[in-house]
Image (cartoon, rainbow, N blue to C red):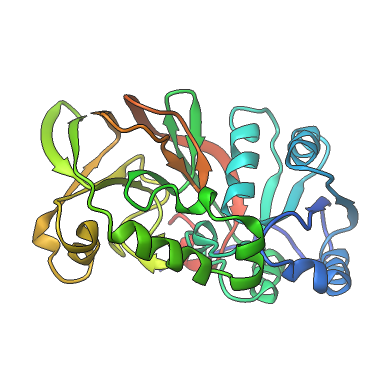
Length: 301
């Protein structure tokens, strides 16, 4: 196996660090001096900016294209989703440095970024990078999950004050309620020319491995292979949730690069924890064109 080469040497590049106290439980803000000190030692030039809103963060991220080599940002899955939506297709995008600062942070696990903020900083310091796919769903993009049906609205339905004080437990309390209300949705899927018709409680389209803090996708799945995994779970106890743990034969898994999904459901799709489109959708796996600092094992060989 060939050795991974670092993309940067120590103390190189021009970086912009964006942070906000509007997401997660504020870990980065409590350790801001340490974060800035380590990033300052990593890059020749570091500009630090606290964003006033998500819109402000998006504007500054887009403005970093062609100006900075690296864009470091802190936040949860929703923050990651918004910035990726803003940067996909832009010329001269900076390499992304992600410091997980949300409630569950499933997105970061795709790149080996999990646990403490110090692990995220160490990954940025080491300098390994990888590309990753995004899903285009109608006119929007998602990075690791598009979901609809039971449990799908939890990430955006739980109020921030509960997420801040209870962390992921706030999600689990809401999930218990969703598990006790049976859902059956007629779902019609066309995937790479094949048709599927099932009655399901919820639908998951995944690029990543984790959802809601739990491993769902196969360890062999890739974040940069041009394909996603679509899971259609048959109705059952707790809206089929146990099928992922004990009765996997009752879950249909479809691996494809394109999906057309038609179902009747009043609520919108959940895209990385953010509200997406409603109703019939077309999903396509695309190379985002973006690079992100990652753990060595995620570097493309």
